[in-house]
Amino acid sequence: MNEKKITVCVNGLTYTRTIEPRLLLSDFLRHELGLTGTHVGCEHGVCGACTVLLDGRSARSCLTLAVQVEGMAIETIEGQGSVDQLGPIQEAFRQHHGLQCGFCTAGFIMAITDMLRYHPLETDEQIREALSGNICRCTGYEHIVNAVRELARERGPLE
Amino acid sequence: MKPAPFDYLAATSISDVTEALAASSGDGKIIAGGQSLMPMINFRLVKPTILIDINGIDGLDRIEKRGDRIRIGATVRHYMTATDSLIQQHIPVLHDAMHHVAHLTVRNRGTFCGSICHADPAAEMPMMVLLLNGVITACSVRGERLISAADFFVSSLVSTLEPDEFVTSVEIDTLPQNTGWGFQEFSKRHGDFALACAATTMRIEDGAARDVRFAMMGVGETPLRLSQIEAMIDGRAVADALLDEVSAALKDILQPNTDLHASADYRRHLAAALARRALRDSWRRASIRRGETDE
Image 1 (cartoon, rainbow over the protein chains, first blue to last red):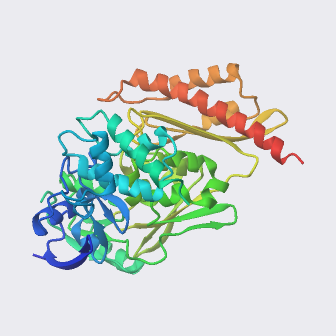
Image 2: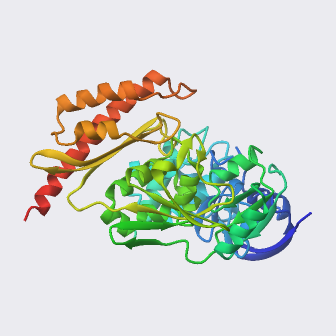
Image 3: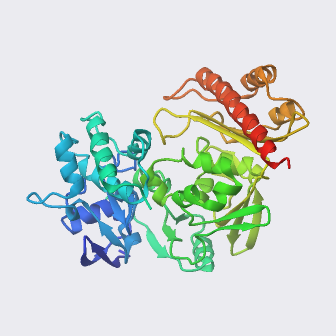
């Protein structure tokens, strides 16, 4: 096997592992690091459940190879908060009932982290366009849009 | 673990890439954003023996203006094209088109040049390079080759790029300031592949359309630059009578497929409707811009 050694920083902690090049980042996070908060849905880039941040921008971890993230800073849902202390996006989802079964939620929250950093989100249309890459089969999206609208208002306009 | 095994090379120079491609005898693949390639690898539709990662090559992530052309490097991601001020100013039709390219997360990784290489007949960027007289720079151990966009797209997901060639950049036209443009696309969900799409540019001289460009996608095996339609519009005013002629001509010319998402008849109907809207937008914008530059 032509294994490669990679060192990555996930939620502020550094990990070094030796892996096969064909290992997907989603499987690396879940199976090698035990970070099972990142969910795997379609595994071909359609559903958005596996979204994580690579150097601050959202990416589908099922369409990224673990060898490609050598040296990068990765953020996953585990970095957002804990059961006792929810992060602000998690708290907005709780307040607005932005989830039911919760399978897609980690992906939404990571995508929304990116949206709040880089996207204007001034209108519902912009919010819905930005959310369009993530699929939720429970909520009908209304409550997720409500949560993002409030987060965007609290954030204020982008510089 | 879904992909079949492969070797991986993190290239740091163009010669790393061309040499590895030559050594792989056609079984090597280049990865930049991977947003089209990785699904195919996950499904094992593609089983490369080696993946050559070009993200670590310096200087390929630039958008540069050279005279009246703009050059987009191989690792320029969709979000960079979408937010680039040179493109917004000099190629507003491309700026508009970017809003339809996939979803936010995919735009963060997917690249302009990668989309051209993938040659999906329902993707925006291949049609845009046809519309903007694109020239693709391909490098191999045999040297550098320039390929006109008009000669690049062969059929669905097939281009004239050789297996040992690596696209380092794509160059496209900027538009003169008095040019109007229209871009109209319909897809079932925002950011999904188009069921049909039309893009056009023109300027107005003595009450008539001039330098007309017209392209469509989603309605054939490749994106289409339709010179018959351009010739039909050139020298005339864009009004209902002309738009009726264009619609009728498109219904004759276009041979879309029936698939899960839409029937051929529906696609043909949609194509004509989107063409009318795009041409109207283009004419209206050209009128406004002619006023602005008349001094």
